[in-house]
Amino acid sequence: MNLQIEIENPKISVIIPTYNEEENIKRTLLAIKNQQTEIPYEIIVIDGGSTDNTLKIAKNYAKVYDSPKKGKVNQLNYIIQYLQSDLFLFLDADTLIDPSFIQKIYTLFDSDEHLFACSARYKYYDRRIVSFKIGSLKLTITDYFFQNFLSHAWYFFKDLFGYPELSGCNIAIRKNIFLKVGKFKQPPNSLGIDRVLSDSILYYIKKIRKGKVKTLNFLSVLTSGRHLSVERSLKRINQYVREKETYRQLVKST
Image (tube, rainbow, N blue to C red; front, side, top):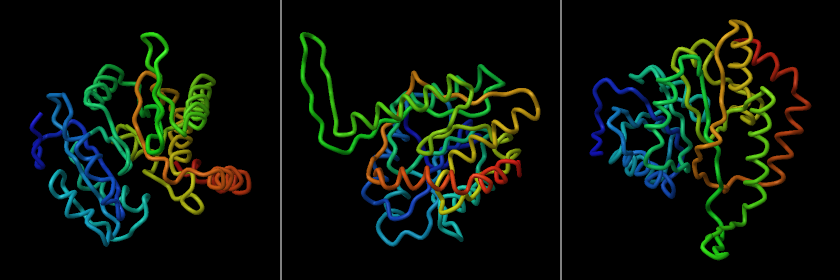
């Protein structure tokens, strides 16, 4: 599909927050631009004051805006006023989608009015890859094998037991629901933005007694593991335990 930067009446707005992402942004934008779909969609980059070549690269593929405040929550909430569609797809600047991703996401929402938000599974991609064959079967293993397995299990079982959690690297959500739950909220130290949004939607669903959030186990994206570390993961868990009441109040402000 030959996508132009200016799109009339887009059905989906794809939003990418950036800050010094010159190493990643081109691949991400090309993956979005080269979608195999006739559904009109706009590509939006909202920047938080990059000092490298992020903006120069992004302007070749997307509409670019400067946020008055940096930080993922500030940037994403600021850009909402400029979006034209009723369906948002938030992607990280280092997240890659396959050529049919937007078509599949749009079809899901179009066919199910009770679907409020969803996320695809994610796989980390930027470390050593080892491929081998067993007969006609080709297997690929990366240094992130166990992290990928554990993350898939986490989201699968949370969804299975009725507490689905959206993945921060890819979130699709209806505009009206996003506004109803109060958009993105700022948790302590910016950790757990996706968790707070997920719980806010579930809280809203409980209040109105309809709607659902889904983890798409049949669909996946590739994302960078550059920020992944045991220390960061433990910090997030520890913070959620210590600041549980703060998180609860953020959710109840829906």
